[in-house]
Every structure is written in structure tokens, then in C-alpha cells.
Image (tube, rainbow over all chains, first blue to last red; front, side, top):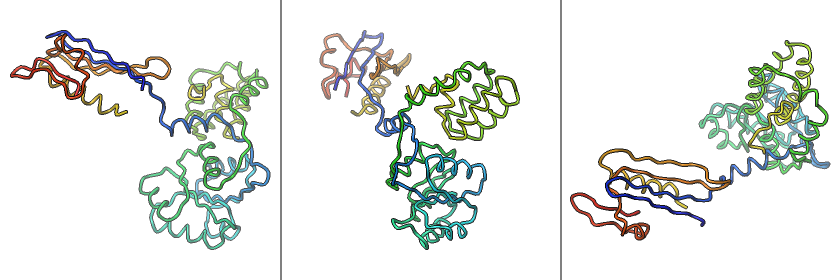
Length: 255
Length: 73
């Protein structure tokens, strides 16, 4: 197994047992790295996805809708379940995570009234507590996504649960392309505190924090306004790797 | 590999055979995919003639009122 052992000991002075082992990241961590190393571009032809979104918070709703439309999904958004179901059928409905067992059951029952040919996948979205996740899973939700929503998690859900197929590009290639197209952005001299806020928001995929930081960059004016415009475009597409790349702050986890 | 069990046994041994001083567990990265662990104590120590045998299962030095040596299990 490649284990190296060592022992050093002196009577009445002390002992040191030492060993070294080859350790690799757990499988789940490897899968996460692999998913982060590719960037989903769009649905493959013939893999249409019709999605319904029922999220009460307008900002979160806009984020989810934008992520889905960015890859070619047809999306209907609303705030009331009954109205949305009437507009169906949907392949997937992304909905605020249920707070109780009864609420979860009622949601799944409502979606069953007008299902898509292969059924309607219910996906809960929220600051998931164990109770909420348990309620959703037991009621028949196919998946639960935690806030802040990450594009890679959403697309992975569609791939795994709906068998949707996406065209994707390697992250390295897209980063290289961006670097070639945006030298002005890369060279912009951003104040350190603002840079730190943008980087932290991008790394945690916090779209709210990111947009607030970009607004503050916009208010600086001059070349920073240009940078803010570029970052805003990337943020609008939920391209967090792009934001980091534009600042020359590639996430080490992707290296 | 039962890394947690190995470390627990080593630290447990170190604490049992250290009347005063300290027991230190350290871990550092050793190359790209290796990790090195060390359990250091200020205890009674192990006689040199037992060093070779100390990694054998269930091997322990002679016991008495004052433990003279210990094994890895």
C-alpha cells in the first residue's frame, strides 16, 4: 500500500512513531472537481427540457430562470403552484423547499395532476434543513438544491435526474478564450477590498453579494465601470469561473 | 486503510506511557499525494532491542509496575 514507517525512541526521553501514506481525495470530492472542470454550454439538440420555476424570492427566481434559459431550457416562472401547473406539463419543476411533510405531499400531488410524458421531476430549492430535506425526499421530490444555487449543481441535477445531455467545454479552454478577448478587464486596477469581495462572492457562488460588489465597482466610474460591465455580463450568466478568470484569480481547486 | 484507528492506537499508547511532558500528533503533506503523520511523546521510551519487533501485532515490552516499553497494538 506504500506505507512508510519510522520509529525513533530514547529510553526516558521519548518516542516518535512516524508514518506516511498515499492519500487521495474521496470519490465525492473527485466528482465535484470533475464537474467544476467543465463548463456547460447548452442542451444537446433533441434534449429539450421544459421547466417550471416557483420561487417566492424574485432575486432567487431570476437566478434560477436565468441559469435554465442560459443553456436552452424552456422556462415558465411563477409564484403560485396552481397557476404554474395549469401551464404545464413540465419535465422539471423547481420550487421552494417545503417546510412541512404536508406541504411537500401537497406539492407532489399537485404536480402529478398534469405530468410530462416521462413524469415531472420535483426539485426543492432552499436553505436546506435536515427536516426540509427529509420532508421533500419522503414526499417524492427527486432532488434538493441548496441556496445559493450553483449552476454546476443545477445542471448536474438535470443530467442525473432527467438524463438531459449538455454540450460542454473544458474550463481551461474557455478561460483561455476569455483571457484573449478581455485584456482590458484583466489589467484593470481594482481596489483590493472590492477585489476581495468579488472573489469571495464568486468562489461561494453568492450571486447577491457578487451583484452588490459589481454595483460598487460601477460607482467608481472610469475604467472600473468597464470592468463592472464585463463582470456583470459574466455574473448574469452565472459564470463564476469567468469572473475569477477576468480578475486573474483562478480558483486553485480548478488548477 | 483504517487511518483513524491507527492514529487512535498510537495516541492512546503514547498517553498511557507518558507520565509527564506532552503527546503531540502532527500531520503534514509529503509530496503531491502523500501525508506524513507523527505521534511524539515524552514518555518512558522503547529499548533499542525492541525497535524491530514493535510493529508486530500484539507485541509489547515487559510490563510491570513501571511500564518499560510498549508495542503498536
